[in-house]
Image (cartoon, rainbow over all chains, first blue to last red; front, side, top):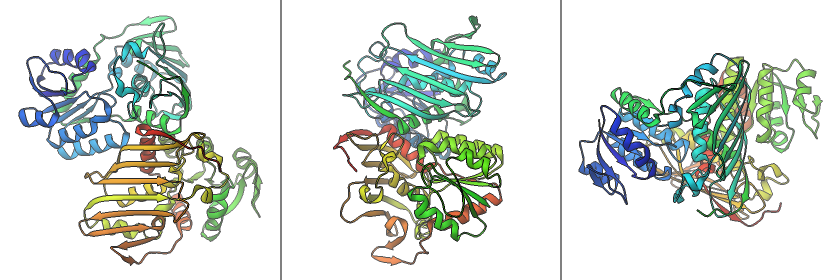
Length: 305
Length: 305
């Protein structure tokens, strides 16, 4: 597979480039970025120039902010390329539904990457939960935005998701490990007075069978960071920690796989592209849209990076 | 069908009671309302009391504000009753998805009523559009909230939809007359400084084939009211006026059916209940959720009823 990458920012350099280099069957041929250049590849300033200048490309990965992803995805799919979408797969649910329809018409693959679903302990936790009954779930996703997202103004703009940018990772794990459909019932969004997107949120959700899911997202956590999901079941307490990379039954840590979210996703992309398949689960994005739809806005102090 | 009605407010008195009285095969047996009583029926203060006191009921219509509808719908479906949901069918998309799953498990009917789809000219306009190609669409939905929604504080609360309460009627017509899937790409929401829900909104949408849909919702229209959808096509201009009740090709008005949205919906409900079918299209609610997800909030002057 000959791959072109759009949006050479932090996530592309930290995760995509090393993972692509480790994946059999895929070569990075070109990069499109307004401000940056890749090493040893053809460089372009935008996707249209890349498609024109590197016609041998048959797949495109889109790593730019979600607000700009739709037009690029339409362009790439219309040109007959397989498309890998960084998360979130779009700025709205209905625009991703349009991409699914377009990929189907074009007979190419579309992959909505939820990297946290590929964290080392998620599959094992999901399989353990499937053998019991969930009583309740608590999610605590608290991190320091200044440490993890320095100089990323787009996250604070409308459509930039704010604290739901990390929070959607928790929702992607939640919707992977809960065997039935999760519904969002209520939300509170804390929005800094100088921003469009929330810095904190509490969500009230439930599983399809009625178990409560209490959730706190906070981007103001300067002490210990937490990316934890605790599942109370009839067979005891399961805890996923460190963003899905470790898991515990009671206090006993359980064996997990290797930490290799992005390499696992690129293997998956190569695999589905060979069969022109679509792998897009909209459930995590739907829960975020629902939180914005029904959520009460609470103004909080201005945020300065 | 023996029907119980929950929420005896303005919409129930203006529309549901007269329509039920005109519909063959359905009898209103009981009403549940915190503050009001129906004539010639068993009266209860809440749904649980109604289900206990009138076990002969086999169908429930939910007319209360959307924030309270989910719990009531779960209760009614769990009791094995067919359920008719006033619009919007819920406060979030994912909660309605849970209702669909529950109705399926219970083997009963669930009906999400989009009354504007039953307006007199909608079916004829849809059939005309299906024979041509859409170039662009403009929606203008402008009304005076003080006239149409006096004393309804819930519409201004989180989850109350604000100007999307009428606006979702336009979206329900739009998604009926456009043959492919509509995507929402961008939105601006004008929110009064003392409210949670918008008083005005502009939306940028597109059809699946890429035609632009420009939309304005405004609740501050004190002069002539407008509920118009104008569709530019390769075969000329079609205009739906008066909320879908009249239609024009160029300047020439076309013949439409009778104005009987709610009677038509109750006939539909009797029909699907006889076959335990589900009729829930989430597309209009999805577009509203997406508008809240990506929409830029603009604070505007405080609203006082």
